Amino acid sequence: MSKNSANIDRRIKKTKAALKVSIITLMQRKDFEDISITDIVQLADLNRGTFYKHYQYKEELLEEVIDDVITDLIASYREPYQNSETFEVRNLTSSAIKIFEHVANYSSFYTLIVQSNTLSGFQNRICNELRNLALQDLEDCQPNSKINRELRGSYQAYAVFGMIIEWINDGFKYSSNYMAEQLLEIIKNNPANHIYKTTRI
Image 1 (cartoon, rainbow, N blue to C red):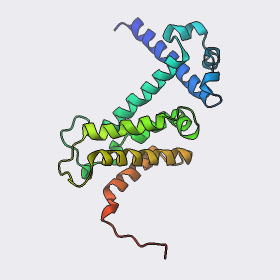
Image 2: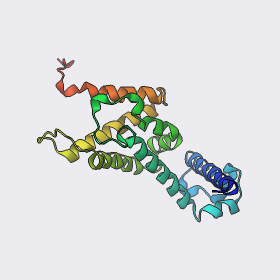
Image 3: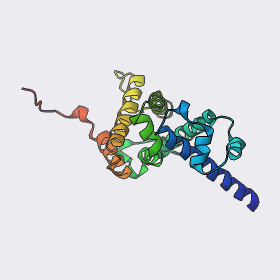
Image 4: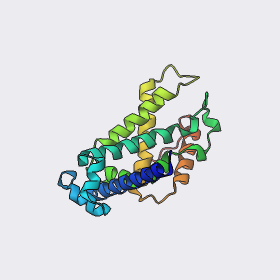
């Protein structure tokens, strides 16, 4: 790739990034239907012609934002076992867990979908992606025949997303590293083997 081409690519990435930040920021203030392309380009400090070089409609821009999030979510989830033939939870380290870094990197987007009615169906889409990753990528070497694999996948997906929701609603008061450490401790603690004292007597 020539130096000129590299410069053009960087400018395109910078322009698209500005438009994506703009649309997410505007969606925090008003309904998507009420957002105009003029609104988007003004906030991004660009002109309409620049917008139409890359997108035909605002829906196309939003879809690319969603695709970016999903692509990065999948890569982040797969990080602990990428390029590995086996994956042992006991050898997992918190530094290998990247899903909370992913959420932090897209914090504006995740805050939008959790704390507003915008893209309400996207929460289910995220959980479905996490569930499908667990089912498609990982096969238990010592499966318990009594456990329904699909239900376990759903349990894992919604448990992780539940932690993400709590983190967002708490205003990201913990670091992504702390969240990864907590997830790891929860996984390794295996509460099913514990005995609890009830507090309702």
